[in-house]
Amino acid sequence: MPPFDPADPLGIDDLLTPEDLAVRDTMRNWAADRVLPHVAEWYEKGELPVLRELTRELGSLGALGMSLSGYGCAGASAVQYGLVCLELEAADSGIRSLVSVQGSLAMYAIHRFGSEEQKQEWLPRMAAGEVIGCFGLTEPDHGSDPASMRTYAKRDGTDWVLNGRKMWITNGSVAGVAVVWAQTEDGIRGFVVPTDTPGFSAPEIKHKWSLRASVTSELVLDEVRLPADAVLPEVTGLRGPLTCLSHARYGIVWGAMGAARSCFEAALDYATSREQFGKPIGGFQLTQAKLADMAVELHKGILLAHHLGRRMDAGRLRPEQVSFGKLNNVREAIGICRTARTILGANGISLEYPVMRHATNLESVLTYEGTVEMHQLVLGKALTGLDAFR
Image 1 (cartoon, rainbow, N blue to C red):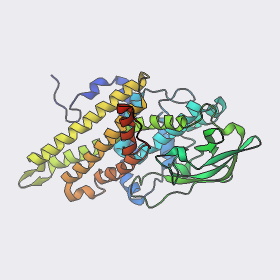
Image 2 (tube, helix red, strand yellow):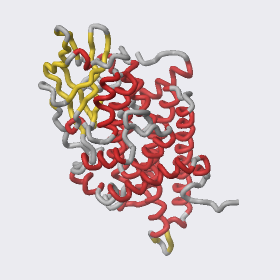
Image 3 (cartoon, rainbow, N blue to C red):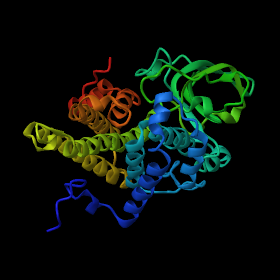
Image 4 (cartoon, one colour):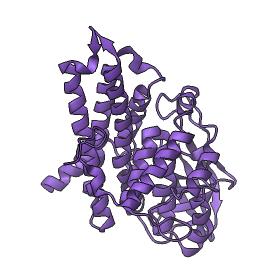
């Protein structure tokens, strides 16, 4: 029998191919070299000064739009993309959010619903990290109810004219292109908006206590005039943005376990080195109970993510199953972070350790791309056949 591995107690690595492991290890090594030595400082200052540099590096590694095919994208498996999300969020949720918004929202929308001209114009540069994208759906007064959005696009001759505001937009103020969803006479449509278009602005949101090593912005559209071919031609209605969100939520299912793993590893290391009452605190029953419970939830969550990834690769992953994963894994990840903080005691609130940074980041992850309540209702409807959203 192989020896018990505290880092992989269920032997989940046995489910991964050599290529899967190579992808994972490449991203783990990159994050250890380029993010971990600096992320506490970025978080404390509330800035990501090397965002464009990191984006280009991630592009060179094939991490941007990596599960998409063609147009310079890597065409990787869903499991490999998930492993990348896990490793990036083990470094910081803000870095994983950068990749998720770029690849699973902005690039995915263009790849899935765009014209061939839109794909050729934007996707190769976005895959290389030369152009950063953002995704404008949430509004100041409409988050969980996007059908009530007020951003409106009207026809003016052959042009479109957009007016409205979007809120809590990752990458907004550094993006070269925005995928913006708006009401039209024909229903909700998506638009590819170059951010240098007159009337478009993206003021950065400050004073955040979560995702501080990430750029978050408001989008303001004031008489933004676009040509007829700016609209995404292959979708009308909420199916467009919700399909993109489901793809991005899948990455969160993996990513949340990365944050949880980082906190668990910090707690385990601390428990075996910190001495109280004459021995390491890991030798006390209450601490061991905490570590055991954390390990159980962490690796159950990774198994769930792996299962969903294999279903996605087989073309059998349903949106309700993604909701199942996001609801469980983010909620359990927050619990693991909070338990880890109790093991570290007062040191747990220090940026010398990753625990509090991950815990506060996950409060945002818990909310964005579907709150707990929304995913509970998605599952409730699937289980009962009864719609309780209204």
